Image 1 (tube, helix red, strand yellow):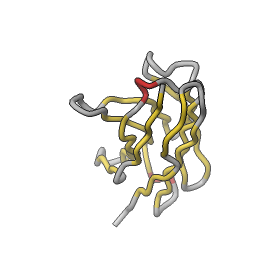
Image 2 (cartoon, rainbow, N blue to C red):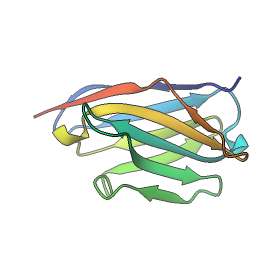
Image 3 (cartoon, rainbow, N blue to C red):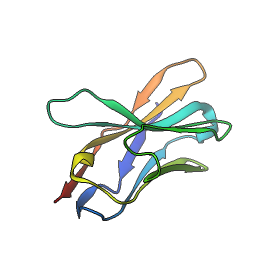
Amino acid sequence: QVQLVESGGGLVQAGGTLRLSCAASVSIFNFKTMGWYRQAPGKQRELVAVITNGGNTNYADSVQGRFAISTDKDTVYLQMNSLKPEDTAVYYCNALTWMTNSLWGQGTQVTVSS
């Protein structure tokens, strides 16, 4: 069974940086896309960033220019710069297989203090 394991969350002051990692138990080339979503308390889960197997990326407007998604072998990263309190959420790694099955990690908490 394929597993996704996130790490790198934590508490940071506004303006700070964090780098999230999501390690897959198989090569990421098994996936059509990989992405990061987040869910703040009382809100729906939303897309933050996605990267395709071909390397194309897409970002939510709210993080454009501040966050960067990248991959390496079996890991997908989310570099988060200029963090804001509104970025506070649980961040989830997602992988979409070529058979369009959606896989999720367990989530990692990111808290940005003002």
